[in-house]
Amino acid sequence: MLRWLGVSAVVVVIDQLTKYIAVAELTARGAVEVTSFFNLVLVYNRGAAFSFLAGAGGWQREFFITIALIASAWIVWLLRRHPQQTLFCAALALVLGGAIGNVIDRVLLGAVVDFLDFHAAGWHWPAFNVADSAICCGAALLIWDGMRTQPQPKVT
Image 1: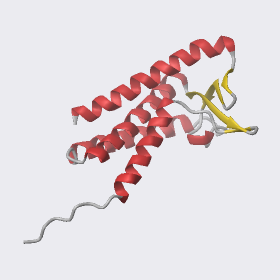
Image 2: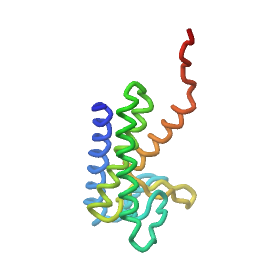
Image 3: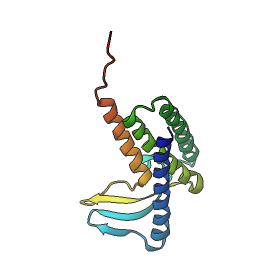
Image 4: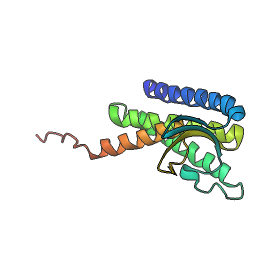
């Protein structure tokens, strides 16, 4: 299990480091056009994915922190129960690292720092961060793991 917690810790460190750099650089400079389809921006998201509930009256901060902490505890429990399932544990480790990275922002800043902005033909994908990417990759791996055919135990 320590290996998987280590993966989560690496996600948290990379997430927090990139957010620190984004805040330091983009606060003064504003948005930076990197390519014709990608910008670096600075967005403080008080909601969840896609800014869901961002405009709520402030109660959502504690709500999202609570949900993330409960989910994190459940993920640690699952990591302990299924250490032999490599893909499953790798996916959970990514989700855990992303959840903790965003919880740190909510606790310290009251909002999650997002800074990656992809766009095409005038349409922008909602800004996101490394933690969000880890959560999405982890969720995709969980789906992939769930769709794989599991070896059936031999009946004797």
